[in-house]
Amino acid sequence: MLNIGPYKFHSRLVLGTGKYQDFETMKKSLEASGTDLVTVAIRRIDLNAPKGEGLLDFLDPERFSLLPNTAGCFNVEDAILTAKLAREALKTNLIKLEVIGDKFSLWPDMEQTIEAAKILIQDDFVVMPYCGPDPVGARKLQEIGCHAVMPLASPIGSGLGIQDRETLSIVRKAINNVPMIVDAGVGTASDAAVAMELGADGVLMNTAIAEAKKPIQMAEAMKHSVIAGKLAFDAGRMPRKFSADPSSPTKGVPGS
Image 1 (cartoon, rainbow, N blue to C red):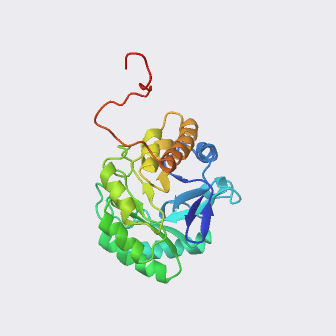
Image 2 (tube, one colour; image 1 turned 135 degrees about the vertical axis):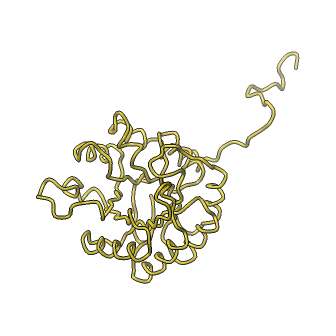
Image 3 (cartoon, rainbow, N blue to C red; image 1 turned 90 degrees about the vertical axis):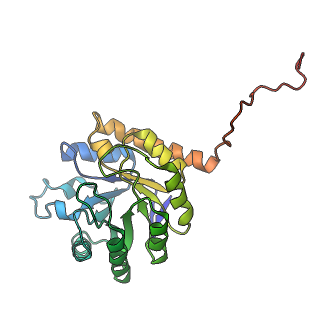
């Protein structure tokens, strides 16, 4: 169970809705993934599309909760305005906060993210900020009242996977009161499993599924990898050793 503020979700996998070849493929991929939380870029969807032809028509409200995001915002003012438009249009106070500081890398601007988060929290939003793999910044986001922290694994849409495992582990230790959801850069199922093994509470992805050769099949793979990674983390891995340790007993064996 993934708990974000007052909301509870059965799946720890959060999926985006962009880049699919068509809405039907998107719908089937979401269903195959088992997700129940789906993020949408409010600035990039046509809220006035003819009935049956828009993105929202393919998202069953009985099955999926919507997580609007502020993708495409480069300053506090735009992010706040977009969040308020999303709340009005989609009737939810959940918001994935993105304030981008660099158009090439799509790296988040932490100073503006923190400022925007403070304003949105005061306005009763459930705020889930996208941030860099920065333990100090992540702790500040937790301290001001964010309901989850979403550090990137690698640049958005890159598919490079977990680039700095050690730092993500430090981020995990820095925030102990809210969920850590690894966001951006996942390329395949093993990346999602590693994120969960590092202690993440969830993983958000889009391109890894949407641009796979078989998106629906990849969505199912991601479902199982997130479950496996979480089980492995909770089970506790064996300690790493720098010498061999035979698995077969030697005591009592002739010649030992």
